[in-house]
Length: 147
Image (cartoon, rainbow, N blue to C red; front, side):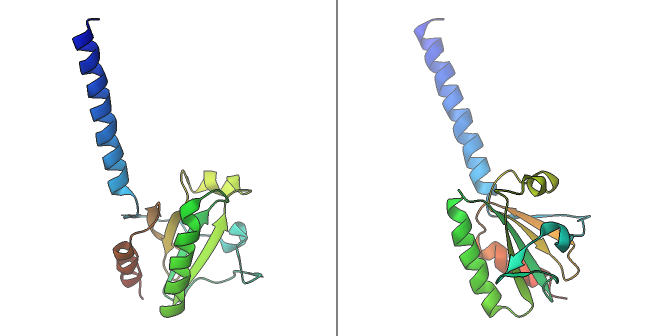
């Protein structure tokens, strides 16, 4: 190939990668509605909170956060959710570490951490947030599921 054609191919690949990267970044932290969400089984999750098993969902909303040991933004997300839980009546935050629970990662199709499932008061998945959530997204989700 002539030098000019090689340069054009390289520039086209760089442009395509940039566009795909920007599209991926724009989708991070936004909630995606789940029309026919499944019912979460707390016993199957085996989640604990303050050393005790979680046996009930939040009165209004539950934020089910999937994390991993190597996730840098998971701790920040958990801190944000913990603060929201302390100031929002009826909100429960549950964090599940997928490091040793690959069965759950497979079942819920978790491809990145953090991933948060927003559940209603009965534990039905209403939306999914991939990546670190944006503050406006969380506020909208909490307001959406108050029953």
